[in-house]
Image (cartoon, rainbow over all chains, first blue to last red; front, side):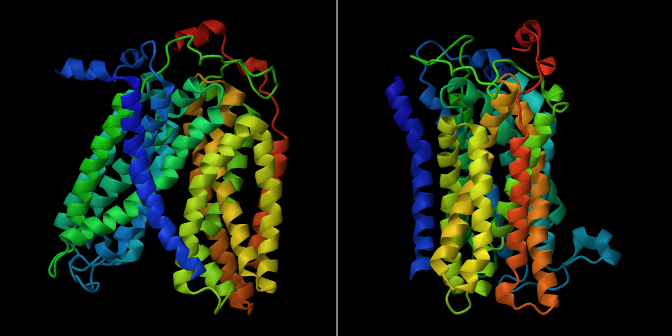
Length: 34
Length: 473
């Protein structure tokens, strides 16, 4: 497996769940401004 | 097969081949930190765990009292929230203990063995806790999540630190900031995932905590093993392309200090206090932000808005870990902490003013910046230790330093809670009950400022000789 593909997979593995969690939290945080 | 497995974990097998990109190391570290960061979200299990028997309400009879402490394992009722609170406390306590005790083992055995051990303990802790839920024994959960999981937290937390610093000599703050940001971000994933999993397995006669524990344990094991597989240490003498060593500075050593020798230096204890005071100030308000905001602004900040504030603070806590540690690569570690202490003092002193003038935006602004600096304190400290003590044992020294976190975890909430209770008992209105605490936090940060000011280069008599440093590789 080349370095480029490894990089995409590795960062995707951690980045996608983290981004999902951040979005969920940001939606909750938006309640402060409602 | 067994020998092969041991070989896979061996430090010599983790040396990166030529051409291996260093940008694979931060995701390897994040695989571990995102998983163990779940600890911050453990509280989502507390209410469901307190209704395992009663299902819709807590069944009486399970709470402790001293006279029937021995009968606890077979107590028929549900566990109280106070009993359940000890699970998290035990995990954080053993985080500090294992990081301090196992630091040298982690450093000398390499990151892969440490990550593998952390994965085994973390998943094992969840599985044992699931068994504890199944047979309704809180002691199994204390041992599973609190003790074994706590060991995973400590080993996992420090496992990638020195590896990242060695791969990123040009940006050590940014590199460790990325990993430690993951610890803050782990709760963002774990919290909705836990709620979703429990919802999947909860029926009218059953609370799905055990199943959630089993699935999370297995997911975390796989995730952490990916990290253990990805992680590699740079070959001896490796440097990033175009790397120019930072110009000589008394506060950035090129020498190394042995882990236990570091304990004999004033620098270690000054940094210990720097971290402890910075964390004490932040952790005290982190746990109380919801109640504090509602009491200081009654009618303006509702319970729902307060929950939003807590969410926003978590984002700043996580973002601050990356941002401040990255900034420290440009302005230096000592200056970064000076900012924390000066700006923190000003902001804490402004919180009561925001309440007096009824300014919610000012209050929110103060808290968000304060909490970003709380996170920044955690993520900047590994690079500060590297500057002071060199790279050879930085992970192990970091492990010892985490005892400051354990201490702050006790000091911070106690200060906020007890001073508030004392004020209310003495007739101070709830809206003003936090004022003294805020001023006290500001004073703590002033003390931290002077501790930071006193940090000078480590005396050369503490440095390892070239031969000693070579032998320890």
